[in-house]
Image (cartoon, rainbow, N blue to C red; front, top):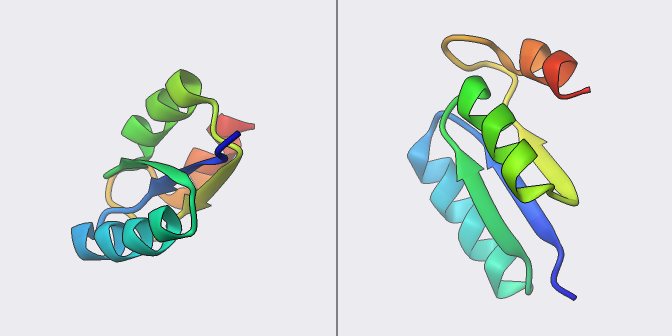
Length: 69
């Protein structure tokens, strides 16, 4: 079974580079460009791991983490 990783990050280049490394290692990768979208994606895909940026526009990573809990 492949493990699923959700990347919540507002920098597209960081998402793409992280996604390439993770997929090459056999992970399924989902992504979101902000906290609000990340919360929705986390509910949809039930990831095994979330990589969460702290400094994002809108709700920051700390608030996103609080809402995910």
